[in-house]
View 1 (cartoon, one colour):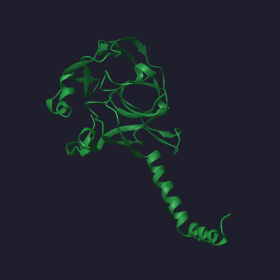
View 2 (view 1 turned 180 degrees about the vertical axis):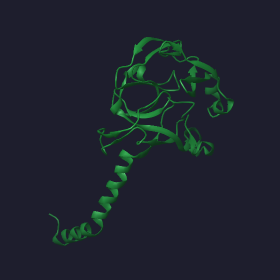
View 3 (view 1 turned 180 degrees about the horizontal axis):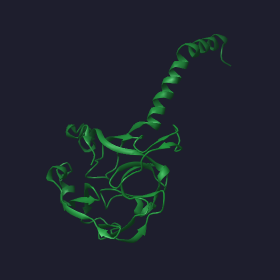
View 4 (view 1 turned 30 degrees about the vertical axis):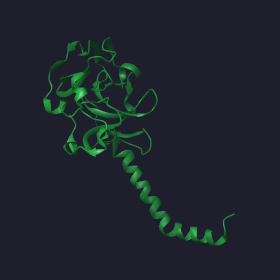
Length: 233
């Protein structure tokens, strides 16, 4: 039993500060749920574009407006495009993931020895700039190959492992309506649509646009100042 004097104090607190604190918490969490949020990146599946220790800004109004704390859409004004980096709930286990949109509804996607084909046409690949490669650890630089990949109007970095087993070839598949095909830029070290299948439109949380801050896990969590507020391509 709660003593009477404590009941009175709780009632007074609720009437005074309690209600204000509750409203503030609801406003803050609703904002993060429906408008904007950040996402910590613990894995290297999007290297060399996103590194472990990056904290990325997620624009949840990029495509639509959702009911806070749900995936229900109140309004929709756009859809993910080729090359967008998006945050979504995995169809495999419901975890939030960060990947790149490779295929949109109606596209035909195929891969042959790590080269993507979009609607029957091979994507173009060119050398990646040395500054981007230099952000990785020396052993990763020597054990991978790096390229720029042109995906319609988007040019972005990708990397391929020289030794790691991976799914590098799959036959043409057609993406159904309201679904998307996602892949990591670290092609041989990414659990993506090659393994868990297409991603429903309603599972997409928002678009990642910027690295807000970055901490180097391998060097005592020191800040990577050059990555602060850098745009994601």
